[in-house]
Length: 288
Image (cartoon, rainbow, N blue to C red; front, side, top):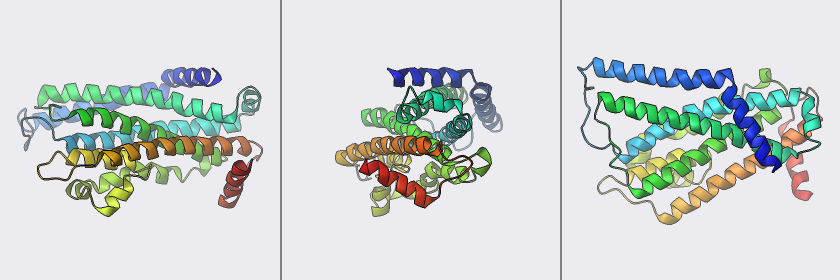
């Protein structure tokens, strides 16, 4: 019950924030202008456009890119929110009635749901605007794509938000957040190797990356999409199931880590914990 209340509170507060409203409006406007400019420059139909349904791997790549931008923006909001909570000593009173785990999980889930709604709105608006200027269709997606893509996208979004929450719990203030840029690049790495993943979906390194939570969403969406290409190897059902389990486990473990660091970090005024101290905290948690 307490967790549900925290989720509602964070969700409503995020929807009412000026930054969230501004981004929600600005991104679709930029996308619409870009689509209109691309269409106008080629006489109403962009050069190289092929009529018919979009290949599944193209849809997966687009979702991976949107996941990168959406998770980055939402993750930064989560990071700043956690750091602000740490700097406000009022949070110590809040923790007297709720656990750090409930508070951190509620913050991540509440912000994550708001961010997912925002991203879904971007996708829907972009799809209909693009469909007005060029032939766009999702008829090429199969039942597997419609089921797995939303799962990977939602869990990937929550994972990145959890990572940013953990980073915010470690930081003593916003000025010490130079590592946030590196964290933001994590979901982008598979996009850099998208062509290789599509051409070699069963390569040993690609298959290993499929079970590494930060890389799982983008890699698996590209692999499952590439399986639609004629002659391409199919992704085994057990790989899909195991990758989803690994991703969900990654979200859960990251949330637990963020809560533990947040709870102990409140006692460390003006000091950023070292990696050795973080390791000690985690060992203490397992021993307790």
